Image 1: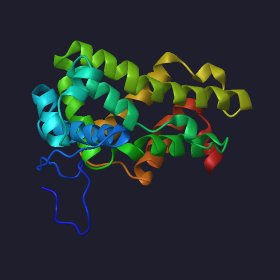
Image 2: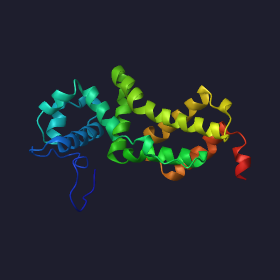
Image 3: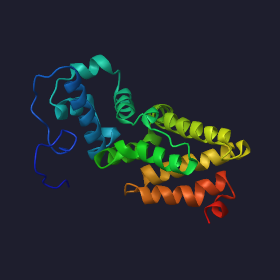
Image 4: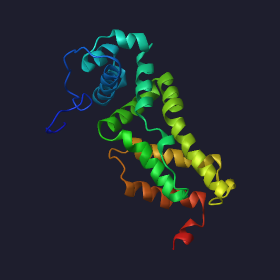
Length: 215
């Protein structure tokens, strides 16, 4: 249960509240719909999310949803895609360890609190909805993994790691560990957790002599 907080609360924080319908346009309606989708995912899950429940929570009519999205899968994926952080906005240091930690933290920023609950709820149900799972992987996960792979390839180009280390298995371990720590754990990972993941698993895989270099 969310605690009582001072000051105005956004729709995304009001998981139990369904606001009155108000006359809004453009970005305000889009924001209300996005907040409602996240709140519905966190509270009732994908299986019970409907256009009607999202419209009611957002305080808007159903017509904006039906005009823009053909089904709830498209609505949910589009929302998560928009709420994700753009990896292009991360400013690299060109130091592999720092960038592995920094880029991962950058990608985690939108997944704190209720948004993290929504991601975890969706991932828990996705195996029952093949189309949802396929689009979730292609449109939400794949761009993040591509950004990490590009980071590693650039590090190899600088000579920090050997290109021979960038095998499909090593990349799969990197992706799987990030999914586990960021989506399957109930607590949001802190910078310390990400640093331990990088130092104890990723760098030894990518650069076997990294532990000696850090001594």
